[in-house]
Length: 272
Image (cartoon, rainbow, N blue to C red; front, side, top):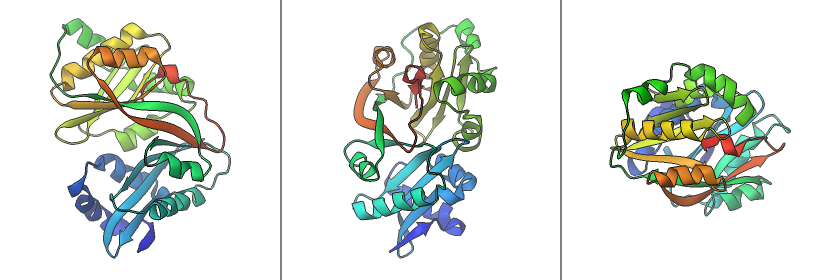
């Protein structure tokens, strides 16, 4: 068993083999490894990749954005990967964030003194197309012409930091759909041929009319595929919006943090 930095020379091939048995957001993984190799670690059984963790370093925080492992990987291996990342983060004050699965990952993270920030749900739309009117005028109003400008403007208030670099370098891909109004922006992309992930999606507080335009937009353009998003569990306006458009709220997650507590306006986070 080897646990350490990812073997970059063979990682793309290792990842392809690892992804045969499970759904992996390979574009996000590969881009993150290219951007922040010093925060990416793997566990190998002989030459076979069996688990890995990656993170992206922002100016004042770190986001753990990928954590994958075989079903039979022990909690000790998971803990060693997390410990390696923390020991190489080089910052004892800035927040380190992670969206943890309540059943399997939250107990491990708490052993490292991560604290709970907010509860989230996975929202899933199982396809079926658009069951509402979607006019050309509506499409034009959310076309995304001011997408980058809107991110700069809204992220600082909602998240406390600007994610333009992260979105354009790590999350964005050829399949990305970018929608925006003056009151919010939404990014979605295909994880594989059948699944689309909405991430991120930020709105100004109480911009409910624009939020409805954006959810209609993503369903209109993507609704024949399965859609998923991670949304704040206790923000009723957000959960009500998703459920009103036939998203099912499944699986419990917790946004956790280490070090300084972040300042996130959850009422603005329509998808993390």
